[in-house]
Image 1 (cartoon, rainbow, N blue to C red):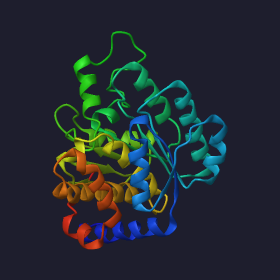
Image 2: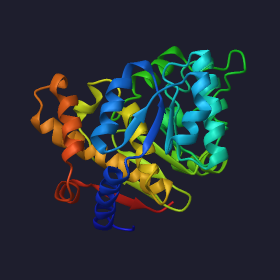
Image 3: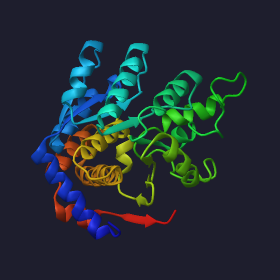
Length: 295
């Protein structure tokens, strides 16, 4: 895929493949978004399971087709379950998406994100620029005293976790696309940097996607939902790069379609789920705003 027209066709093919194959996606996500995430996966054609009981992990890892790990509510027991599932996924070659919610905002959360990010190097990582920046050597280490970001910066990370909250690049996070090469080498096979524009970084290519609506940041969980969507597409895709591109594009286009029918946040989420359920090739082709870039 090297042009938007080819990309639009491939995205639609993957949407059809999802509905045909109905992959079972194991999602360990934060408590706030479990219901919305499950409904979105069902609307796309996937099937969700969300258990994180220790006794359930090995069995569900064996029967599921993809895994999404989201650290939004990082209780100790859940973190250990996430680590176990990520190790099982890597051992079996299962598609895996990791969402380091709020990494960088405090030593506890950042230490957890760094620990989990070191597992399963073939995963896709989705986060904001600031969350991904927290994995790099330039970010203050959570293990050093008096070497942390300010409270205002930590608050900004948490406020901007949503689908369209933060600029993908800018003065605050210079050269993220260059740092991305190191992140890919050490932590992942693909990065999706969410923001007002979304950047997908692969080993040999990069893509900017410009779809979406401001209403996506007025309901809870659109970023976390996107991570689960990536896992669903990853289960039926040839590469992690195309999985991230397909999920990001369909979420953004569905967001635009939903916003046009919504009076506000109260009706937006329902319309978003409906838009995903009915998404067709003409809508993808006419609305997709994508630009390939040279690294």
